[in-house]
Image 1: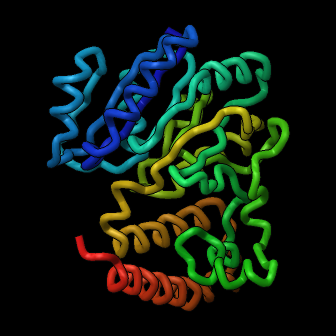
Image 2 (image 1 turned 90 degrees about the vertical axis):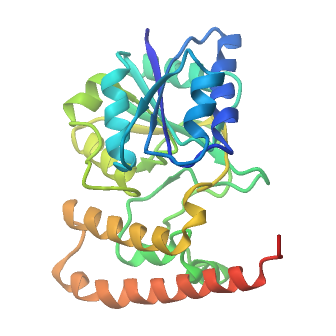
Image 3 (image 1 turned 180 degrees about the horizontal axis):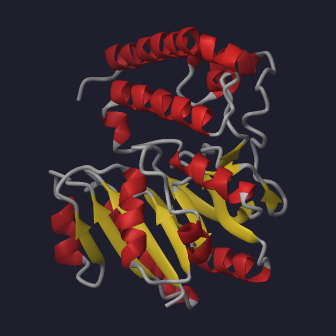
Length: 291
């Protein structure tokens, strides 16, 4: 089989059914995909849903939460396919999306990785591709309250390059790992995801290494994806913020994108971001309607 879909779950009972149904429905477009779910020790009903309702799905049960990249690597070893499609469990694939990704890779042998255009249930874009992060651009990530303020003055730092889908496939720095297809041969040569990234930035790092090895990374605007953004991690907003900053620092160091002078600014930059981020989460919590 040429296509393998690896879905990593953690406490995903609210979204995994829609995700798997969308993958299975791709068969209506002539696409047969081997589906592998790697569950990171969920304590809710995720595993039961898969076992009872999706007996043809390969379920790998981890006895602990090993992180997103590690789980993807585990699933990739199970799926013996030419193309590997990594997905979050809060993704819904729209009709024909997988076929379009495969066709693009078939026609463009110098391209290793492709991703699509992601929007949430309200039609708000998830900014499916971006520039490589820098310390300064950390001010513009989604969790930074400064992003909203600075964007009001037209200062985006170029981190987000497109607010609307482009009119044709374009080469980009990196695509979101929420939906990422890669050639198996390249994935194996790169050694898979770097498992030192427990969560966040593992997709940036993979794309960075692929491009450094001479491969193309492309965004495909006709591949439309519904993404219930950070459905599982939004339940733990403070941990999410800490992990994002830790992974960002790891990537900047690994990719040698943190000059000595900038490293002196890491603590104040990240401290400011975290203080503002924690404050924003507290306001959201206090203003949230009672259930």
